[in-house]
Length: 211
Length: 211
DNA sequence: ACCTGAACACCGTTCAAGT
DNA sequence: ACCTGAACACCGTTCAAGT
Image 1 (cartoon, protein in one colour):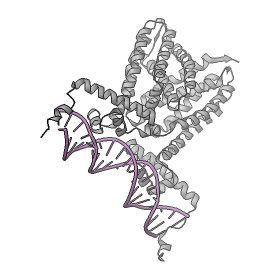
Image 2 (image 1 turned 180 degrees about the horizontal axis):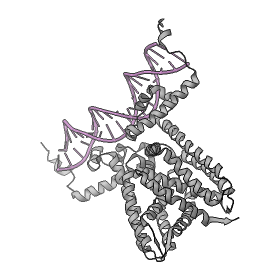
Image 3 (image 1 turned 45 degrees about the vertical axis):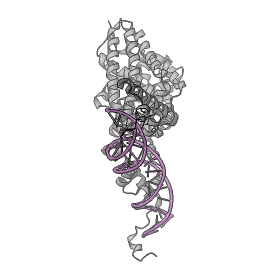
Image 4 (image 1 turned 90 degrees about the horizontal axis):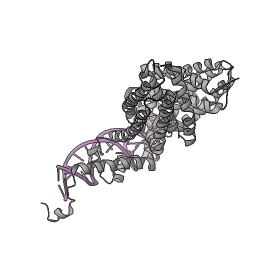
């Protein structure tokens, strides 16, 4: 039988939607904090829940399992990257292939470097989840956007834009990923920043046909 | 007090060294088998030991922990790759840059494809261990070999071979890794096989100076 | 000497019991 | 209705007890 004090002690009902959003946000933040502060090996559902200020049980209301949590956190990060790349693609439409190439590489590197620590931390858990499907969706969205800019190039056209866009994406993403995975110093990131534009421009020029 | 039957039932002492090697080999094989058959999530020390026909305790005599085991298995795989790439480098010494470029890319792709399933399976556990240090060592050895062939090129020389070799390695390895990570169909591997040579040759030509 | 496998600490996940 | 956290199954690792 509920005592009268219950009415006072219990928090008033907060708007369901807003509360949920805040909780999810707190869990996301907690995940990255634990990852950065304690490492992938100590990234525990209990620890994340504790840091986020909720019980494990509550966390499992929002995410059915640990993998789903990591998936969501990584998706959030990748979506942010994709947004930036898409924006860059739209801004580069109708330029020459040289400008497009440099702009794309710069945008991609910039986006990755903006969230260097987070990106590195997330790469460390990447293999624990179905990174495959996420990256596939990622590839698709970035692929569409890149195909669009390449097609819009002022001075050239491509035999098979799909293949070219795929190659470009997988090479740049792969190189950056490789550097991030292996301890990724910022020095090495700088080498990429100077060499990738040359490589991409050279590749695009090699496979392009004059318009 | 040992009974007389012990002398009969106990296996005779097998040469220490040879026995160890066989056991370690069995554990390596068991690891990859469990990985391919049951997936990374079910890759368990107990399961590996069982499959290898030893007790967990025995396995811990050879490998101080699970990470060390995975590290060793991955190292074994990467060393195999490096050997092939180094061999290719030696064979390509003194050729023109075009031949060297195509030869290098072909050798790298070939080596990866030879062990496609193993490579894919290992990528799935890559993040669980200090892949970083392994890849760093890997990078170094491959870097040396690639620098050597590039320097030996008949027709051109490079301002900074170290940077060029690094870029080449990280791009090709990254692209292949990216494709393997995301479910890597062989169809996509084929696109790489046709595009990477073009890209690498274009890059090398762009940064090379006539001799 | 060397191997075994029960035991321990800890993790992901669930769900009865609270409020 | 919603949250909690003890409880459960399972994992990595150890080490007393066997042979």
